[in-house]
Image (tube, rainbow, N blue to C red):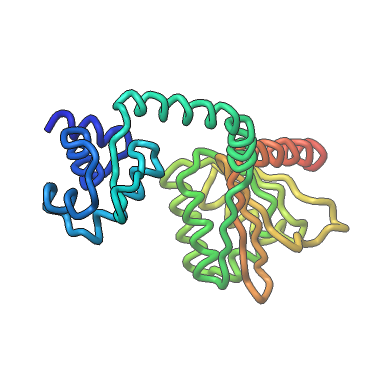
Length: 243
């Protein structure tokens, strides 16, 4: 049993192990003999023997009008591993290149409609700090009570919110946010010539969320540490340039 378990670790399945061990013990055998000796159906034996041949563990020979199979010296297991190692060494640079490309690609998720976009805001409740480019007037008009509940939850979780606000949020959105969040909420305003953000944006942790609150309402979350850090820098630059 220990031998079979160890052979499994080399990539052989149970049936392949049974047939391979049978051939090692019994020498040259036809598929019917292998089937009789292993109690594996003859049709399955043909497929198993073919797989063992592909793995270079057995060789096929003619025995009269029939095919017969002989197990290679077990040292062939080592040769097989060495060959795999050589192949892996050759393709490893290309595989690493693909892995690095995939690792650096942002994860992108799409949200359609008010209820799905609301899930973006709820996801941001896991943050310690949020950076925003927002029109709080639009946010409160679109989400109404669920929007106020979100702000209340921000306060409850003591999440800091640094916001570059649309100029039109000065009269209503900003005071409402400040009333609920108090010292957790700091904000600067865009100059008067920029009344609204066509698309709101919030950044937290490794996430950048783009939110269109005009009809049709939709949003996107990009998750990538490098991109998120870049947008945090952009937020800081805009913060310093506004008041």
